[in-house]
Each structure stands twice: as structure tokens, then as C-alpha cells.
Image (tube, rainbow, N blue to C red):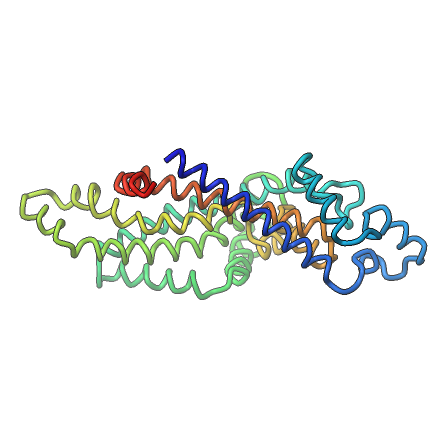
Length: 312
């Protein structure tokens, strides 16, 4: 397992290098100057001064070499164009915990409720609880997140007045965004858990356990649920990354000063360092989460650990 992890880390480093390189050159091949986009009426000399300050007057290959050297040796992703005097790495450090807080709450809420709904739907197949869960799952997948957010804002903030409409502060400011972001996760886990449990409940080992007199509760708890959850663990990879990336739309709607909010602004303002730095951060989180999911597979199912060992 240790060698396997080292091998995966090596692949992650190579992947990060490729992503950083592609993103850098794509950004710098876009027509027009980001400095001009920031202030179209700036005097020509001022634009030239900004270009020199940010190194945009140098050849792209030289800019890339400087960027790569600073990123590897210092962890320096450059300075933001839109926010003068602020480093991209410091903005990520300040804002990612905010996105992570809302995203983690939404993920935990979605997994708990979605798994519970999936179990209930499987055990009560073709009854009204199963139909209700199916409707919730369809709505969670098909209805856009911003529509759910708007509905929650209207009823919980405008009508009931029990929660703030937008802004950032105490826990109450995270309630509506958390619920809105959790709907898709609830729907996904409910569908997968229901489907996997029904498949497992029809297998021979369940019939054998029933024939031996094992109670339905123990069959579900010790065998069916454990095997049904395994395929769902795969979903955690992208969703763990979503904990930190958050939802760009949700952060914009509720005025949450998270990383997604800054990322959208960076794209609008062509803030190249911010776009590149944030993309690298998102990629790193996603790759690390995939590695953690693979390790979790081995913890949940010892057979996978054996297969990995034999594969080496």
C-alpha cells in the first residue's frame, strides 16, 4: 500500500505540472491585454508601467519559467491584477476555508440525508416512501441550484424572516446556502444507495443468510449496506473537492466571500494569476481527494487491499 501511495503521488505531481502548464499558456494566449481589460481608459504609459510591474512585457516562455520557479520554490502563485498588493496564494488561504465551511456542511448533510432516504426507499420498495424519495431525487437532479436557492430565500427569509437573505457572518448565514447546495448530493446518494441495496438484496448470500436464520436487521447492517456503500464511495472524490471549491453560483447569490466568488470575478476581469492559481488549487484538491477515496476503499473492503498488494 505504501508503494502504491508513493506511485500515486508521483502521478499527481506530473498531472499538476501538466495542468499548470496548459492553464498558463491558455491564459496568456487569449487575445488582448488583461491590464487594458481592467481599465480601458488608462493612459498608454500607465498600461506600460503595469505590464512591466507584472512582467507582462517579457516573452511568454520567460514568464512561464519565472512562474514555475516561484511556484515550486516559494509557493508563490503571483500577484492578483484586480486586487493590487494581494498575492494569489494569500487570497486562496483566506477564502478557501469559507468555501470549505459551507461546502463541508452541505456534503455532510447531503450524505446523511441521502443515505437515509436511499435505505428507506430500498426497504420500502414500491410503497409511498419509495415514491417520495424518487420524486426528491428527480427534483434534486433536474432543478437548478439557483432556483432552489431562490425558493429557500423567498420562504425562509422574505416570508418567514427567520434567516438572513444574504451576507456572511454567524452560522445562520450558512443555513440556506448549505441546504441549497445539499439537494444535489441528497438526490445522488438516495438514488445510488437505493439501487445498490436492491441489487445486493437480490444476491445469493442474502438468501443464504436468511435461510440460516440471520435477522433482517443484521443482514442489512453487516452485509447489504456495507456492500451497497462501496460503489458510492467513488462519488466522494469529486464531492470532497467540491467542499473547498464550493458553488460559484451559490456564493454569488448569497454574497459569500469564498474562493468561488473570487474565481468568478477573476474570469470576468481576466485576472490571469488568480485564474491560474485557483485552477491549480482546485486540481490539487481533486487529486488528493481521489487518493483518499482509493485509500478509503482499502479500509472499507480488505479485498481491495489484497488486490493492490498482489498487483504490485
